[in-house]
Length: 262
Picture 1 (spheres, rainbow, N blue to C red):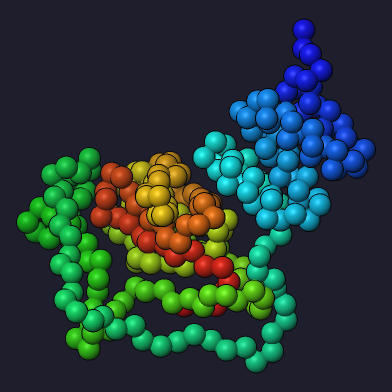
Picture 2: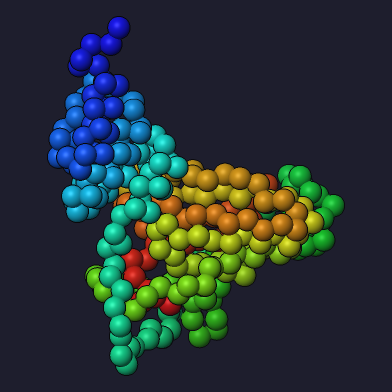
């Protein structure tokens, strides 16, 4: 039989308190439950919801980070329940970002990928350099040293205009995407559009202070589209989207906290 101090009984008691709008009592019960059984991801999720109800956004974000590697679906669901850090307000005569990014120093050499390792050799040979390679230019620099494919963002902006409503699109054509760099907010949806007659194994990698972590990994079949959420850990600034079957198909992303980027 289950004793009074069993983790499950404490968890159910916490949910009962919550239904009676006794949020603080519910939080204490869930904390006790998690102390007895820290594997209960639903308790962590509901604890985050109760913190949101008390307007303790920072505590709720800690729960998102705690769930992130244990149950990513619940982490994303809790993340979507949080109030955004950036506040939308009406803006009159707003400014815009424009300018030029220049490359200083030696231009890194392009990368060569041997197509002999490609699972779709017959198709990939049509888009080779004529010597059995696919070339990827990570740095495209003009004669005047202008650097293509960059993102410039403003930081520390807490309120202002709204983010664009239109969903961003990553088109995969001839095992290449024209958007080599994108800016995206955490939690944003991205439309993956595969116009090739071959399947792409699209994987997302996040770059953190602790290293590189692989996140979503799902195939995008030939001539199909798929919506993928960009959801990374709180301290992530950069991410990479690439095809593991055709590694020269890739796009890099920069996490932005506000819509003031270009």
